[in-house]
Amino acid sequence: MSIPTSLSHTKEILAEKAKKEERRIEQKKADAKTIEPENTRQLTQEKLDEIMPEVLTHFKKQNKVLELAILNQPSKMDGHEICFEVMGHVQEEIAQKMKPELLSLIRDLTGAGKLGIKLLVKEELESTTNKLYTSSDKFRFLKEKHPALVDFQRKFGLETDF
Image (cartoon, rainbow, N blue to C red; front, side):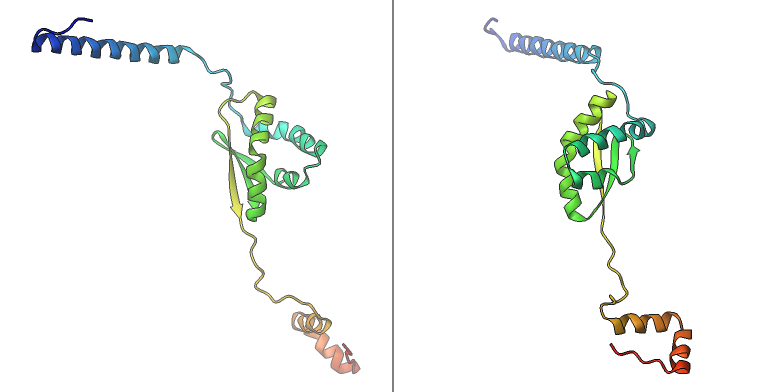
């Protein structure tokens, strides 16, 4: 590299450097395009359904019951992601912890490259009806559900002693 003697010589040196940098970037892009990724297979729903018994067996051998509860729920493919439905935050945390192991296991079994896991959190709905704790609550509920029970109680003189 020479020391510039004038402003025009400096501009020439800068332009030459820019051209070299552009060629270097283009070469890197070309090299990246020629390298094929190792795992280019795409996971399909059929293949996922085919390997799920093996995945379940793997977790059964390790006695991971909580993970099995998540894996036994229906799963579906959404592009490159496997969607699992989890109930509540407890199952969500367990699923987050098992993600790396599950992804590596599925990749080993299928050879799939680009793969992810998406969790759909479904909250359990609280029952709007009252809980029936006592015998009198249960009997009152049955009388509302089956009005003939009131007639039988009156007709036969049945009394409840609870």
